[in-house]
Length: 515
View 1: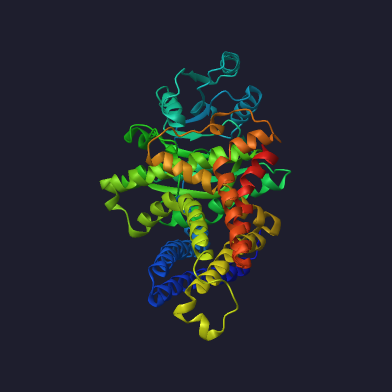
View 2 (view 1 turned 90 degrees about the vertical axis):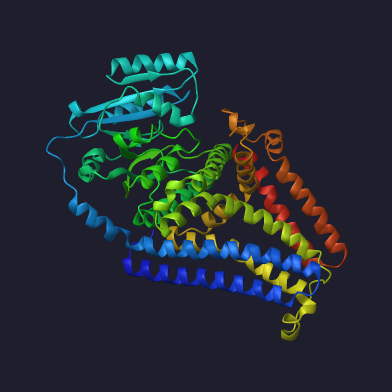
């Protein structure tokens, strides 16, 4: 990543300006299309484009503003840090590790590492909250905990997701502060508690979240997936923290237990961390984000694992939107806090649904009454060529959606290949995320066929096809429409739809290649 502060600031200014120009240009062009429309078909196309442009514009403007503000977070954090003091009487700390049928060897290694944390051992307890159903696994872990002075808590039911597992452990815990680490997270900096505990000298502080990351992956796929988290923790979390809306990310954080108790435990939703963060905020508590890595997790190795993760995130984010709008206490929050929570809830939905809707609008554009030809400046502004205007603008917008992540990834992470992979991953997850949002709205089970599978046969074409039926159906449909467009001498439109068909087929390829 770029280290020069002046260069970073200059690049951020340029990036913000570009996003603002694109947002204004998109909305402005959409207004122009509505103005010159003179048939029902033209109005349908122009209104559809306007909706997409406005939604994209609002997100881009807010995202660019947040991106700019995150540059100043270190200065804000230094002011907080200057007031932090280690108390004379150290608070007691309970570290909880929730597990479910995980490899005992990994769990045991990471539990032993937690025991090495630099902190008064008389003030530190470690809890293994085990939800395992495999007798061999939970008996092995129970025996290990007994030998190593770790408090073992087991339950046979799986009610309440991860939050239920944590709440079960909290029944046995009376410590003042609670730290949470996932089973695969290995402590790399043993000063975690000594660094974070002093901040709790502020009695209104609810929790501290540190940067989460993975051990380095050897594959382009794994490295690109890790950038999802890097973008969130490097840019979004610092900006949110300035508004006191830093999200507790489920682990690698430290929490005041009295705040958990005040909320009746962790909210038992799929993404308990986001719900907890919001509730502590509306109660008037503070939160801090520390942009430092104290532990590293196991990298995502399979596309199934990524799909399962993204399904859970989008299901939970969609649930959160409903919870947010129904919560009367949210009126206590500032405008920026409201925007942070709304954009967080809509984030993955926006990325996914906008791609699906853009595909639909693209089909309407290709089959508009006018075929694609070279336009003169007079024709470009003529109502008679509105279909062509849309094709041109749609093509430019689509190219920019491809180029943007590539440019940003190149600037900050010096890799064009990862930028391309991030674009392909976002497109390949569009239907998966959309299905998760629909499942949440319908209040159906937060799972799917592949989501429940623990073992996956990599390079299994049957497995890949069976889990991407919708994507393949869309892809085949677009191929057929592309052929029809080409047959009607709309070569450009045919190529455009074939390109979309290829992108939807990427989901099947990734399931096949990465399991």
